[in-house]
Amino acid sequence: MADPFGLRGEDCLHVFVESYDYRTRHGVIERLLFDGRNVLVDRRVSLREPWHLSYPFVFEGEGAIWMLPEAHRSGRLTLYRAHRDLDDWRPECVIDLDCIPVDASILNWQGRWWLFYSSAASKTSKLAHLHVAWAENLCGPWVFHPKNPVRIASDSARPGGKPIVMDGRIMLPVQDCSRTYGGAIRPLWIDLQSEIGILAEAGEPLAIPSSAYPYSHGMHTLTACGPVTLIDCKRIDRSLAGLALDLRRAFGRYAAR
Image (cartoon, rainbow, N blue to C red; front, side, top):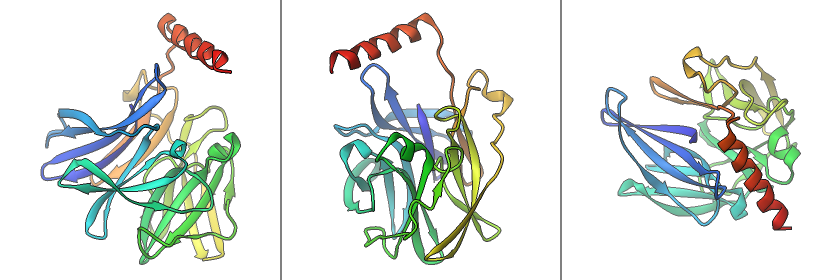
């Protein structure tokens, strides 16, 4: 499991995550339900598509509950709307941007929707490019920042969680991929000077809590949800079973050529 995003309910917490099967290399979105004591009481698949899904960014706005999952293998960014309950997600619109986005993260600030994302165009752009767009309404039209990508940095560009406003500045959690994918999370402090200017300053990598052991090989996501902060830490499996799985996947890629 990866990419936790939370939504508060009445005396409960809904946590949406990517559930990834390394055998099929396919991800679906699951919903974990925690009661008022933060005890897990239910777990179920919430959204499944023919393509890989991850990064289930859930949020409220314009009188509804929305999900903006990462789905670049579909060739587009689809905004889903919750109907009846939080396991009935239906496509509302496709958000047209200047590229196929990766890990799109949204924020409502100063009367506009702001979207931060990386580009799926190449391995480098996925890990090291930050793009920005804005719109008056969720379904657009969306305006791309004229200087996209506004930031190029392998250690502080790819979004890694929920942006929030602190002391008048936007804090966007970003991934530090300078050594490895999902190596660490940094806070990126963003000042939007105007529609044509942007300043950004990256903070130091956040320390992984000792309580996360043995998941101490990297931090991948940081999201705020009221009094709860959700983090995603990773463990590298160096067991014989893990090695065998890597070999099977490598052989499958070779055979498919």
